[in-house]
Amino acid sequence: MPASPIRDSRAPAAEDSDLGDLPQWDLRDLYPGPDSAELHEDLKRAEQRARQIREDYQGRLAEADGETLAHAIARYEGVDETLGRLMSYAQLVYSGDMSDPEVGKFYQKIQEEVTRISGDLVFFTLEINQIPEAEMESRLQASERLAYYRPWLRDTRAFRPHQLSDEVERLLHEKQVAGRAAWVRLFDETMAALRFPLEGPKGREDLTSSEILNKLVSHDAETRRKAAKSFGEVLGQNTRTFALIHNTLAKDKQIEDQWRGFSRPVSARNLANFVEDGVVDALVQAVRESYPRLAHRYYRLKAKWFGVEQLPYWDRNAPLPEDDDRLVPWGEAKETVLDAYGRFSRRLADVGREFFDNAWIDAPVRAGKAPGAFSHPTVPSAHPYLLLNYQGRTRDVMTLAHELGHGVHQRLAGAQGHLMADTPLTLAETASVFGEMLTFQTMLQAETDPKRRKVMLAGKVEDMLNTVVRQIAFHCFEARLHDERRHGEVTAERIGEIWMDTQREALGPAFTFDDAYRNYWAYIPHFIHVPFYVYAYAFGDCLVNSLYAVYETADSGFVERYIDMLAAGGTRRHRELLAPFGLDASDPAFWHKGLGVIERFIDELESYD
Image 1 (cartoon, rainbow, N blue to C red):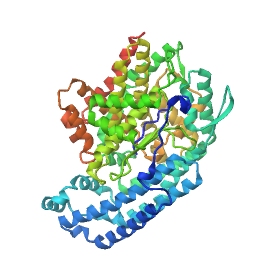
Image 2 (cartoon, helix red, strand yellow; image 1 turned 180 degrees about the vertical axis):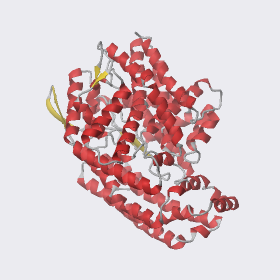
Image 3 (cartoon, one colour; image 1 turned 90 degrees about the horizontal axis):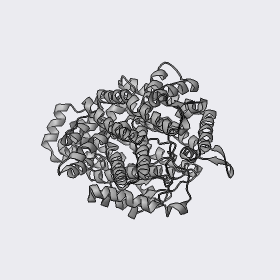
Image 4 (cartoon, helix red, strand yellow; image 1 turned 45 degrees about the horizontal axis):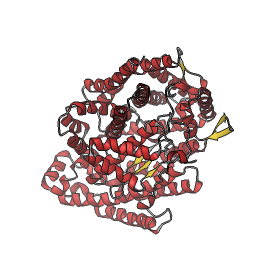
């Protein structure tokens, strides 16, 4: 479920009447309702088919010829897609209101049912991975139907060196709902239930995490200060719970990594992303080396604009003094994004318009709703859904462009089928960040007022720093936490120290911090939901910056190559996908080229002084 990086810079809540009619999604394209006959029939049918697959093939796949194996995979794909539809629906219902106990009960029930049913299928990929390489290649050569699944077989068999016995794999699979998944749910529901007090003109308000973070881009400095302190203090009151969740999940991962033979905490994620450890190390090193040229330099410039030597941390995403604080109604945001997509490719815009013409977007802020934004691909036989918390600022328009990019990517890749539509996280951010860049460049080119251009450039630079520098700082925090957990439980106080070390390194000397900020590590969902997810944002941003630089000077054919890249889904690795554009992520120059785009934006901002 690709999601936006944590951009804790949402704008103050606006009245819906100021924004126009904000769309809400209609999940009936998946199921009529949680208690619908269709949903229960799919559960029953998936259970029967999964059991039949086990009875027909368990213990026989290693000897199956190419045609038999291809037929078995097609049956497996059908059941897995049904289970994916069920789980997608439950996740989307739960994201719509995490505070409702009945919704939480439904979500847990579907998780448990899907896990139980899919237990009958655990043997399937394990037995496929037991087939020797030469024999598998012989079967692929002999069967055209099996050759269709070559990319999926390649990716599945990449995990062969780390595969455990059938019994252990099934145990890990079945314990998931009472182990890792339960701790993730505890985190989500704890965050959804927290309320953050804020004294304002109308008296005291008790705000959700999304609402309090929105105040960090208020034009009123005192509101930003109060919001930042309230957020940190309430998190601080709950750090024992959050530290327990982090410690438990890190230990759980350590145990499984040891059994599977992964030498580093990040290695399992790298393998899942089909990117080499060395490539990720090169990215992290390049970004960390760029901290002084990017984040330190920009924030020093921002402090100067605010007339101070150092900024308090709550001003990191504060609007510039020149910002007129204009609200962008939903209709204008929609046309701005679709126009930007259409200038690049009519086909991309047409696919994007489907999300607006149908009830595939949920935009309003609601109590209990998941914070942030995401695009859920669901399954190819349905369509993606977008979740936003739209509040009418330029950054919300960028988030719409970002998530629509995911949705378009997922829609195009759906033609590859259920097993081969998904892309690794490192490539999943390509269309989203590219969509943001298209939208930003369109808006910037249309702006002639120097003050507005400065505000727009500064906003874009801050988003890019949040996507690249901040996410790599998150990655470094996560790596250090997991390393220390190997030697024993890490206290909440020590976790706060690691957080402060990595934040100070990334943000530089332009900021002052207080004790409340030491607790901000606790709210980052990516650490909990998908360990070591965060570097994929920096990977995607640098990749797109390099790709956009090629686009600016490319001859005809770039658009077609780009759409072909998106439509490939998970059938090709990053080397194959980038080769038509003359790019290579294993070359250090690739990362420096992407970081250079941010540097040039900062150069332009310095010219406004």
